[in-house]
Image (cartoon, rainbow, N blue to C red; front, side):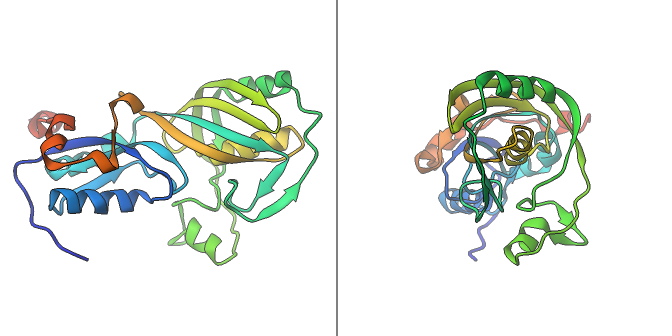
Length: 239
């Protein structure tokens, strides 16, 4: 791996519109190459299949990881009813197929409404959560499934955008640590037909929206400064 020098002239964040098919780390590596600097990181991992807002931290901005990681999130996603997979998305091995013709728009809206508020959610096997020192996705790749402790999450808004069986498109606003794919699987269980996600776009991280984001291919050194929020690190630390 190429090691780039530290730069003193770029500090802050870049709001990136992550493309599908890449890991968040892949995005960081590309920006390192574009800016030819080592101190680049990200806050709030997106799955490879997911697209949308990824906060990339530049230079001294990498010190602010915790601030951005704790922001609330918003997603626009689609789930497919009647299909349950190992990874809770369409890229995983199919575990079960069930009839879904009994599902109505009203049933989906009621379940969405019931989810609003604070509740426990079990992290999916395909996640970065650690169990006994191992990432869950590492165990999943080995075909292993382990018990996971539920985590407290918060659902602020769930809006049904499009209902066209077997596809259900929805908007989700939630706390950090919420897994959209697990939400879809849990909804599918309540509908007695199973479900998995086919598309996820993160539309918001804290105050940063998809409209603020720049495409990865468009990032150039001369442009990046226009998309960096200059952050006074002394003020962030309360100095």
